[in-house]
Length: 284
Image (cartoon, rainbow, N blue to C red; front, side, top):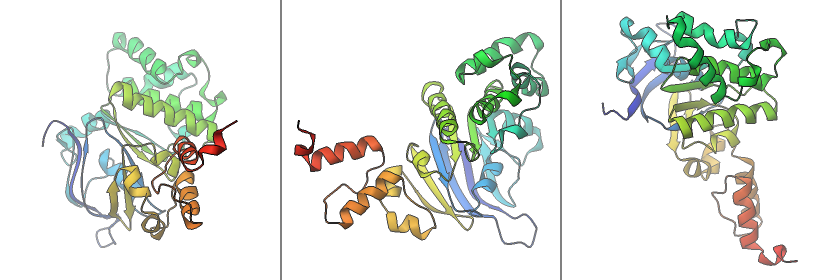
């Protein structure tokens, strides 16, 4: 394995019971260091199971997973793997344990035995990176959903992970909370080089990733850039998923005989496309 191969699955299968149908079957993938990967799939497709495998919460029934070169099956690596690949879950309330934000971020450091004198700078930096420094003395239960999730992320960041695995971390949030959390993680990926595995059912979030994987019945059905994946509208829909709203709009225009690009992903791209298609519409 090369140094840039950060998260690696080699023919991984996982069963919840020995004779059960695999929840994940024969998956091989390499996620390079620093990549932002979105994983999509309908309910029961295996994406959350894969997330827990990548973090070492589950161990493969067959095959092998390495995190920064450490085999998840080797017990001696368990805590190093959990520290290297931090996990953020759907409900932030399940990850908040203290009565003050600062103490909540400190909790993970205490668990991994970080010396007391090293904690304050790591906590302060994690809160700064997530935009939560001004809330350090607030009770977590008084925060919004998006703020709570950013505190949960800060708690992971304080442990200085190399990767963040987020399992539908915005599913329970309102649109503003989703934006806060996604923008925070995207910035950490861009500025800190943290590898991100972003599991979501929001297509507009996946459209902003560098890579999109689509799971179906435990297997990997599609893998490519957002533009490659979402331009294959019928294939995506056959997997019981949708495409980003602007991609859907582009294909509605095409269906009406308008020669729009098939791979439009964002509002900004659609605005440019409309300007190209109808230059006179933009004249005063």
